[in-house]
Image (cartoon, rainbow, N blue to C red; front, side, top):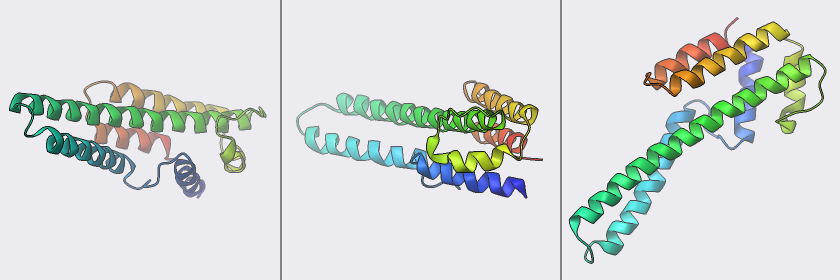
Length: 155
């Protein structure tokens, strides 16, 4: 039952941090970025199509592909850092420390702090660290996230 509470609180936290589509969060982030960069590329193509050569437009297409991937990785890292901040706040609350990284989630964090012990929180934070390490290597993203979330959010 406490994991249902954890998932509800995480969804609220992610929404408060600007991540609206928590069920398919990373896919939604990638699609949003791709849409934005595709639109920028189309604008450049329309503007410069008749005034420049083909190789330049091909270079711009490669530039926008790289930009899309870079922005996605940046936002994915931000999401993981938000989860770190959240678990850090739960750990602080468990140990009676008032400082919070996410002050808007203080009430929810206080509730969760009563459900977890320090060792249990630290184990879950270690799983997040491993997820971050795996994502920085050439490991399949979906599998790394699934394995980590099973370890972090299971009893």
